[in-house]
Amino acid sequence: MTPAQNTTGRGTALLLLSTFGFAVLYYLTPLLTPLNAETIAALRIVLGTFALLVFFAASKSLGLIAETWRHLRAAPWRIPVVLLCGAMVASQLWLFAYGPISGRALQVSLGYFLMPLVLVIIGRFLYRDVLAWWHWLAVIIASGGIAYEVIRVGGFAWEALWVALLYPLYFVIRRAIGTSHLGGMFWELTFVSPFAAALFIWQATRLQHIGTEMWLLALAISAFGTCILIVWILSAKYLPMSLFGLLSYLEPGLLMLVSLLLGEAVAPAELPLYLAVWVAVLIIVIGGTVTALKKRSSRKQEPAAVTTGDGATAAEQGSADGTETLHLQNDDAEQMLVFAATGSIPIIDLATITSPEDPDAKGQA
Image (cartoon, rainbow, N blue to C red; front, side, top):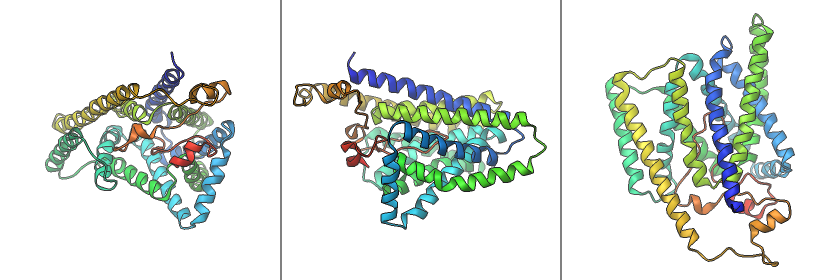
């Protein structure tokens, strides 16, 4: 097995582990009742910020934090924009807790099914991405399902719209200000952490009747979510973006399964909506898989990899040095926006998560 295959296998295992982990986190959240979603989200924000700091220190990538801060200070107007992005992330973390606690987990999971379709439209009209015919087919089918639901009930679930529309806006803003990487994620969470900590303390004083056991359970479940965050980040380092995006479509399905396990159900009248969305996502997954396989086949027919001065390939040289070259492949993402449909953490948009000293990192940031 080649080093590249080893890396991909490791990344696939980590991504699947994190995907199932987020589904478990979704399932465990109702156990925290009578804590409200605000308290749970605040705790997760604080722990998530700390986890990112530990990750940067352990991976010797603290320079990315400083580099991102210099980027923000070079244009001070970016700082309040990053705070806005942090608020968007906080609202999604809140919704990820609110859904299963309030019996609206199904509606939240629907939003994660719809988000990739919204991103396809944004990619076409905002970034001039060239879409394949199956992209358009998926969008048309999903739009038909949404139109049916709007006509049927005179509206649409706000939880689904909050995910499907706000996350793409968040991605667009991050991309516009050059913070669509882990350094940007760290500062987003750092900026909102003081507010989250204050909210958590205030809620804790209001909920003094809750026993110590419940607070310990909340801390344990939130810590579990933080560990899953780190696993997800590691998976992104090892996988090509195309495979990373395709495997991430598994998560909305798992979130929906969890919703059903929590006792929610799809009403017969809602089936046309869900069927339309499922078919649309399936088309994108199949189309993306075929495209990725074609690219892999064409890549195998290309000349051998460029060697270093001593005759070793770049990957072999990295292994010999005891280091690994871990970066996202831009050619895997050309002509399309690929994002992971992750419910509880912000997404890295075609950006490296390696140290800024990596020359490939500077080219993609």
